[in-house]
Image (tube, rainbow, N blue to C red; front, side, top):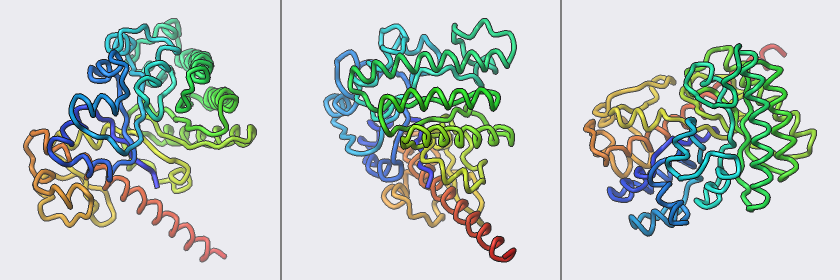
Length: 341
């Protein structure tokens, strides 16, 4: 089963507590992705963990759910929020202070840079896509080494390296370096595969598949254990490769929350994933924690924050769909194999 970690804001936990659906959210989603924001900056300046900040300021108890945190794509967002220069060591310092379970390494998002959506100063000199890809891997590996040293010193075990690249050669090098560095730090870890946060093409999926196999190859070489996380998976329904799905443990996605805010929700109809308006959920037979306890909020299309519980429904349905798609593909593969033999 692929666990979907919705990309959320701290206030989502606050409103979930205020309107009584926080437990439904925690039951639907095993984990959450956070990015630099004002609330996290307030917690860091007070030297509080995220959970302490929620409890003391809002009375909200975050008793479950894995918290994964990204460093933010734009350098200035991190610096503005935490009032620290964005460096590998300072990022680890923030992760450790906030006591997040996992923190994404300071990578260079090469696909976003290629789309001119990233302003990382260390790769600005690249004149071609090939040079950009190579530089991104080299810079990412150097930063990861610095973060691994700081993580060891600080006792932070949740560092998540990012494996990426625009070619198989660069992906291979990225995987080799990431696994070698992490294997020296600890014998088990989570590794993220960069997607660029866009709808995936067949070429993208092929490169992701190659990245996963490359990580597994080098993990075996170092006798380590790894969980694979998909970074910025905007279209979870686009990968139908059962072998690949079975190798992915988790994925963060903006989609569940974004669609919830838009007043939309996912349903499964005739084995297919379908996006519908919130009102249509009133008659939809759903056993998810959100619909079971707060159906009136889930089916309300208004923009009130109490209705953002729809993100819990969306996460639940996406995970159910991926699990059923994998099961169907596995059964089809077994049946075809049986017929051929």
